[in-house]
Amino acid sequence: MKSNIKAFIFDLDGVIVDTATYHYRSWQHLCKSFGFEFSEADNEQLKGASRMHSLEIILELAGETRSEEEKIRMCAEKNTWYLESIKEITNQDTLPGVQAFIKLAREANYLIALGSASKNAIAIINQLGLTSFFDVMVDGNMVTKGKPDPEGFLLAAQKLCVKPNHCLVFEDAAKGIQAAQKAGMYTVGIGDPRHLGAADMVIETLLNQTPKGILEHI
Ligand code: BG6
Ligand code: MG
Image (cartoon, rainbow, N blue to C red; front, side):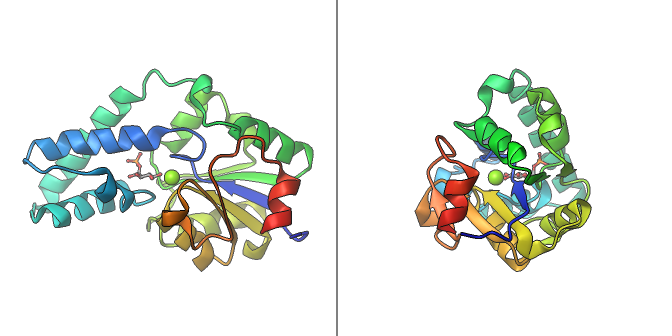
């Protein structure tokens, strides 16, 4: 039992809400414009990466190069499609068990932070009506380096006034697990153990999980 854990830090896309699918479809849409078949396996590499880093990974996979100006335009275009695709999401679209889990964690006096690489994260949390769940929110506008860099998670810990080794991070991305480990934090991977095997513990979903149960296993 990790009794020194004081704070839980949650990634957004693929952990709180299934926006990872919408990111994927929006990139697919963009890839069609230059004839690249962007697969789900390729998409795994993008999870947790910033918008620009994601585009750079795609261009490399496609064997394409673009000017800085063009890359900025492509990122803006992808984001327009993405925002259009998520405009109807509501509180009903959160992933199984996540709201109940955060409520239990708050009742047990754990501090709760958002640690997302997305520049849209805070607006999405507002749209889901979950702002009051979080003591602190860190999004992609507050950092200069995306995951796997630990900057975002370290900033969340600093804002919560807790040491990194007192934090437990919930992530669906291999890059996110790496970022948390570089920050010196404990990790729970949510999703496929084939991608998240480096985490201290991997679960399929947060459904029926409790903070006590998780802390007994890491
Ligand atoms: C991360 C996602 O949370 O945010 C990535 O896993 C995404 O897929 C990144 O590229 C940046 O998101 P946004 O909303 O700033 O384009
Ligand atoms: Mg994610």
